[in-house]
Structures are given as structure tokens and as C-alpha cells.
Length: 371
Image (tube, rainbow, N blue to C red):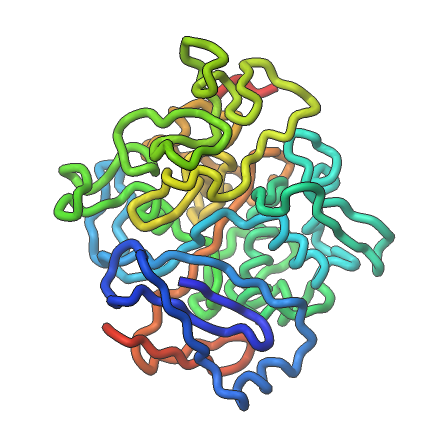
């Protein structure tokens, strides 16, 4: 499923059969009339981003033995983590002043993950991507991720960080305070913990999954993945720390990108999203094990949920049993990222509210040692 947001780019891409499960073929078609599109384009918008998602079907599945994974409805989730290119567009649209600190200076200075620079002064900030913009963005707080979701839900407007741009939409925010829940109206949001979990680990036993329907790792297996610097052939691999003899053979040599057990302060350790082209989940998500920890919507005491491990963690953090959390203001970590989710996939003639307009859609058919 492709979800485009912004003036002139509104479409849903559904699998050709309309059946639940991983997409193998996608078709897209415009879904807005010119009058509706004109109404939505009355506000100034940035250049439109297209957020690629996959449909998570099999609604009503049971929980795993961990107590997570059951989701009553069909929904969609980001195929990839949010990238540097996508987050730079967000910053360019709403952070010329950056009232709530969507940009963290370490995005441009920490060589382990360096990816976006900020120049100028408040009121005229400008942003640029460093190197490969398909790497995931990091040094983001839960609030940053919520504001990105709001911005998408509001149609990617350009302006200050306020009502109608970043502070309302899917989440009603008051500065960087409170444990805020999804309000049920915005198109884009962070996934619930069970939504994230299901996308990563679930595969019905009848469709070739494990006997209980859940794998231990998000690559569709119970076997420990290989740590390596991307792969077009290894279906069980990812960007995380693992050291197994023999050394220097291109796999499991420590940090995935460098192939070394020693941390190098000048090395960028992130891999482009989808660099492990065969190592997707049953539904077609990539990098839910390694690269970056990912925020979800779980409220755990005074913190928000994280899952998936990162480039600097060991394989145990990729497991379905690994559950972590941080306070939602925390962004000072070079391993924090996120992916978006969407409201349940629309059925025939179901309307969605997006950026103040009516959107109609139609289906053809129903931890390594840290340095």
C-alpha cells in the first residue's frame, strides 16, 4: 500500500486480490475528486511525501505467549523506518523556527549516525541531508514522532509548529508534556505495541508460520539472524551487533556495517532502509530487527514503548520477548527511530478525514557493548 499525502498526491495502492496478507502486487488509483483536492490544497503545503506501507491482515489473531500481537482490525504500517529524506522534508516545512526542538544537533554532528544539518537562525533555519538520505532518522523523541504523524495527517502543511500543523491531528499535544494517546481521528500515527509486534513476528501457522503463529525474530524465523552490512540474498540478516568466529568473513564480525568488534568514532553505522532485501517479515516490513529502536504508542509507567533493537545491540534485543521503554522526551540516543501506522484500511465508500477534507477511497475487492 502506498499512501501519498499532499496536494495532488492522494492514493491507496491495494494488493490485486484484495485479500489480507503480504502484498505481492500493488495497484494505485487516485481517490480524490478535483473539488476535494482543491479544498485540501487551500493551505500551503510542502512537497508531498509518499509513505510506503504494507497491509497487515488476518484481523482477530490471538496474542503471542508474551501477551502481545493480537489486533482486531486490518491496518497498515510503514514498510520502512522513517528516513532522513522524509524527516528533512518535515523539518523544512515546520521547523524554520523549531519551537519544540524537532531537530537535534547530534543529527548533524554525531558521526555514528550523522544525516541532517541545520543552518541559519530561528525564523530562517534550513536543513540538508548528509550522504544517503534513505538511511533512517535518529535522535528523535516520541514527541517528534507524534508531530511527524500529525503533520502527515494534516496534509503536510508549511508553517509554524501550532494547531493544524504539528500540535493537532492524530495527537493533541501541549509542548513536550504528558502521556498522550492517539485520538482516533488522524490518518497517520505511531503503531500500538501489538500492531508493531504483529507486523514483525506474526505469520499464521496455516500460511507457513510457526505452530503458534509467531516467530522469535522479525525475519520469519526462530534462528538467530546474521549481522552484516546489507544483503540481497540472506533472508535472515540485519544491522545489529553479533560476533561469531571465524572473524573477518563478512558476517557476524561485530558491528554490522564496519565488520569489526571495535567501535570507530568516524564510522556511520546505519544501513539504508530495506538494505536487507530478502529479510522481511511475513507482511513485508523491513528492519524491525536492528538498525534503530522504534517508538510505539505503548504507555509504560511514565515512559513510551520501544522495540526492535538497533545497530549497537546484540541479537537478544531483536527477540519478540524484548520490550523496552524511554521517557517520551528522550531523543539523546543514536539508536532511536520510528515508523508510522495508519487507520484501518478503508472499505468501499468509507470516508476518512484528512487535512480538513473528506477523503473517499474505493477497493476493487473486500545489547553489544555501547561505546
